[in-house]
Image (cartoon, rainbow, N blue to C red):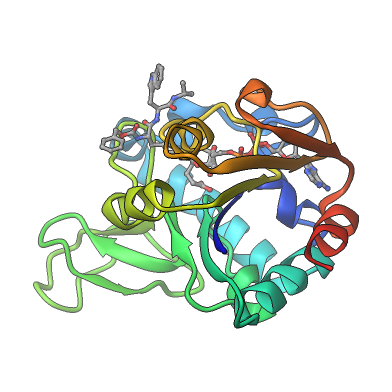
Length: 224
Ligand code: BJW
């Protein structure tokens, strides 16, 4: 079976990584415009880098939970072809053993030169005006997709959605596009759609089946 899985912040919540829109989530303590837009970065790079430096440290201290581990096991099962797409910028899927993982919103482990476009590993602590290892200009920024920027690997994701038999969304609120449109796209192409989430999402109507509960319980149950 061809399965496309989309994960969001909810899958890493039980590893201790804050979500965005839940009570106590990241957007309660930070303005989206200030820390997750190119304009916010241009206005105050130190504030944005501090936000991502803190999140890089939090992700490093976290460990994969049973939901990440179950998906890694499913991806290895020979009877399925699993495309794992995550909106998350942590590396908990990789640390659970998943390979490949499509990071459509970038990764905390990466840095991107805003001048020449070269990608490089991010230092644990990024500072304003870090020099590019290739062109030497002081233009390194987090390799993260901010609002108004184009998500990564869209061609590969759309191809997988078009041929999927099953689409599964795990721990994502369905508020941010284009990811929030994937269930509908997969459905139009004939896939069954399943949502695993602690609570109802904004696009709950796009799913043939919904199961509510914590990812660390629901995902291993579904994979078994
Ligand atoms: C649990 C749980 C547990 C908790 N177990 N579950 C008007 C209409 C339509 C679109 C737009 C519009 N105006 C602007 C747009 C586009 C815009 C957009 O969508 N805006 C909306 C706010 C309306 N999108 C963009 O700008 C994107 N780019 C784009 O569209 O380019 C055009 C283009 C597209 C395609 C092809 C060509 C061109 C870019 C979006 C970038 C998003 N960036 C962020 C921040 C950067 C990454 C980072 O810092 O980490 O990405 S925003 C933030 O939201 C982050 C996340 O990846 C993303 C999604 O959040 P997620 O994962 O859903 O988390 P939460 O917190 O929202 O939800 C958590 C869920 O978990 C909840 O449902 C809980 O119930 C659940 N949960 N604990 C299971 N234990």
